[in-house]
Image (cartoon, rainbow, N blue to C red; front, top):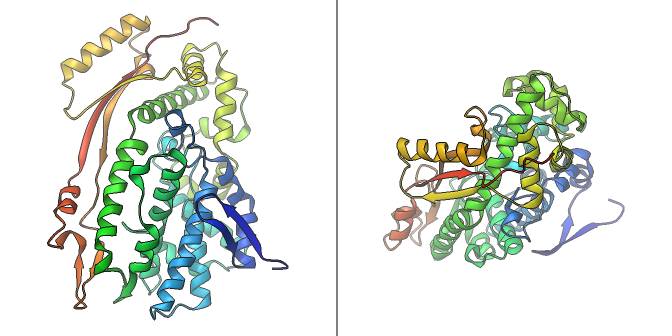
Length: 410
C-alpha cells in the first residue's frame, strides 16, 4: 500500500489494515454496505447507544484475529503469511451475508436463507472478482482446509466473532454484565493436535465468557422489547409481501420491491447470481424508507405498524417461563380483536406468540482446556466448574405480544 491505512475504533483504538488485498475488500461496495446495517437491529429501541454497525464489528473481529494469530505464532504455531492474511479475511467477511436488520428478517424477507450460506456465496463472488485470491479464505470458511484450527477461530463456541461482538455490544449498550476478558482469553489460546485449546489457567476467563454471553442474551439480544419490535417488523414485511404479490404497487427501492415480489429460496440464490447482486444492494435504509412512506398508506396494517415504529408505540409483550395454554391464547386473541376492532383474518399482524431460547454452553461443540499435564479435556468436565454444567441446559421463555391500540386516522 502507498501508505499504511489506519482506522480509529472506539473499542480497541487504532486498527491497522495490514495488506493491499484486505484494503481492497474493505473498500468494496459489498463490504461498505455493512456500514448501513446495524449490528443489533432494533435494539436501540431499548438501549439508545446500540447504533453500531456490522462494519464496526467486522473490522474489530479482524483486529482481534490478528492479535490471536500473533500470539499463536509466539507460542510456536507455524502460520504462513498466506494463512495469516486468509484467516483475517475469513473473519472480516464472516457476516457479509447479513441482510437488513440482521437476524430479524432472515426468515421473512427471504425464505429460510441463513446469512452464513449467503456469506459463503458472496465470498465466492468476491473471489471471482479478485481473480481467485480468496481460495484459501473459502477453504477456511467452509472448513475444508486441512488445518482445522483456523475454521475454529472463525466459527465455534469460542470464536473471534463472539469475542468481538460481546465486547462491542457491551460498549455500545452500556450493559456491563456482558464484560469479558477477551485479552486474557486470547493470551491463553494455543493449538494442540490442530485444535484450539485454552490453557488451564484461563479456565475462569472461559467461565466468565460463557456466563456473560448468557446474560447478554437475556438482557440485550432477547430483551422482551427487542423481541416485540422484531415481531412487529416481521409482521409488517409479511403484510407488504402479501399485498405486493396480490398486485399492489409501492413506492420503494427497486431492490426491496424485487424481494417483496418473490419468495426466493437458497436454491434460487445458488442458481442465479443476479439475485445475490440485488440482495447486495439492500440495507436497513430500504426498510426505513418504506416505513416512512407507509405511514400514510391506505392499507391500515401497513399504516398502523409503520406509525407505531416511528412513534415507538411497540406491541405490549408478556414473557414467561411457563407455556401459554391454548385457552389463554384464544382468550387473548378475542380480547385483541374486540379492543382493536379488527377482523380475525388480520389478527396475525397485530398479535404474535412463540418462544425464545438461550443456552450458555453446547457440549457437542466443545471448548477444549489444555491441562498442566498436557491433557485436553472439555471445559464442562473441569471439576470445579459446576456453573458450566448448568449453562448447558437450554432455557426457553414463551411470549405473547399484541398491539395496544390502532390509529385509524388516514
